[in-house]
Image 1 (cartoon, rainbow, N blue to C red):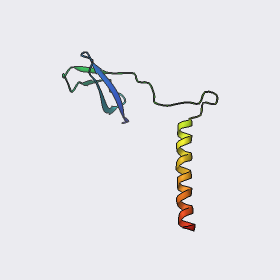
Image 2: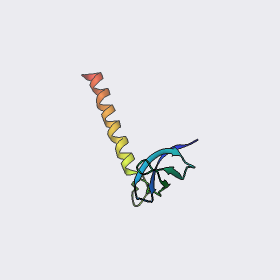
Image 3: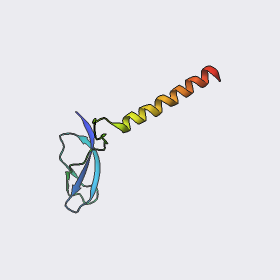
Image 4: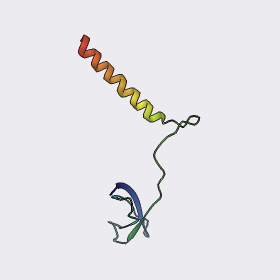
Length: 78
């Protein structure tokens, strides 16, 4: 079982997000109780144009690494 968040839209155009198994394609709309179908959503990633690397992930790792180094340095040398 693989639970993930998906967006669903009913015929009345209510859009809701549900944590469901990846096989689920229809849920009940919590607003109007009609069937709501799973939407195809764009992934929330950013790729660097030339290499295909994930610069936001690399930047986040670098910031965390720098902060950890500062904390460790402060513990050692005050």
